[in-house]
Length: 433
Image (cartoon, rainbow, N blue to C red; front, side, top):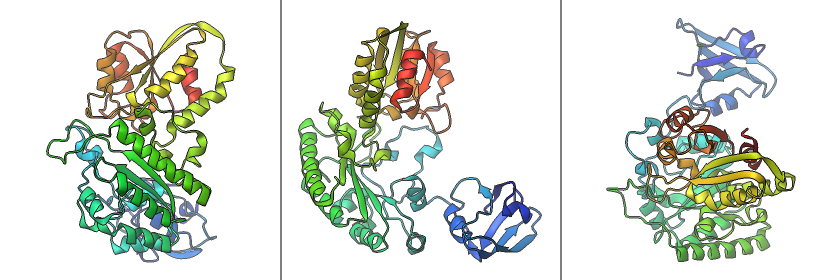
């Protein structure tokens, strides 16, 4: 059922008598599985709209309107049939490594091309039906975000545990032939898809330009919950330096040939070995920002813009900033500069991630329970700043369902939250806003 949640005032839908609670059956006989179907089939200037009223009465309405004029119907969510679930069993899957007894929605494996197009979620292409392919091509759903990991068929089958994974080259070529743009991702695992395999993957993806717009490379994330899962480890410092050298070589060559870098490493690679994150030019249009690639550079550049306007002195104030260990070098750079302001004491508080364990150290995966354990009662009545990246979208709860109010109540700290901008962070540290 495609239940209409709202009908906009003054819209065509309201004028023809459609009400909230009505069920959208079809447009020109086409079933409506998602918001893409609705937008695509309702964009025509003439079509037959079929609605089912709550009492069971069916209305078939001939619609005549301007092309692309919206009907004014609002739905709850963007997918009306079932989300397309992942059937892979990836050796590095983060969801398989989640602690028990978390929210059930966190264990959902999404491999839905509609979420890829609408929200930038990465998909593997292994779970697409021919009907899905037809829809992608006919509606020209571009760009898509594709988890490639390796272009070597055997390596990709090993990584995804799915024989369909071997078709990645043909699948990407099919998207290219349909003029669909692609942002690609490689989750890098030591001894599996790094080294020569990584080099070959980068080269093959580069050959698929201009369809392939970017290649983002992120390190495998390993939690402390990997019992009965394949044996994986993190990268050594020497391995990371070799990866940086390889990607730098590729980027330099691509810039000469294409005018842009094409391949980009996650911030964690540089931070892990104590190297500065690359300058802005490295990231071009920051096309892999949703992958966390370039976030550190954006924060640093934003801070450098506002740095000349920082005060020399303020009323005495102390502020504590919650952070994950992986972001600590970047946060410390900002904190050290702010501490040159007379009257200010800014302190970064790196929180160990006991909840997930393993090598998980990104700020966005911090939990309320770990923050509470770290703060204890030692920060009672003190100004503690928590970045909003730890929060569930649109809510004030963290991944373990602990709320900001609960953290404040249990620790006695004066909690404030900040978005990802340098200005908001500085304002919170200096003024508490």
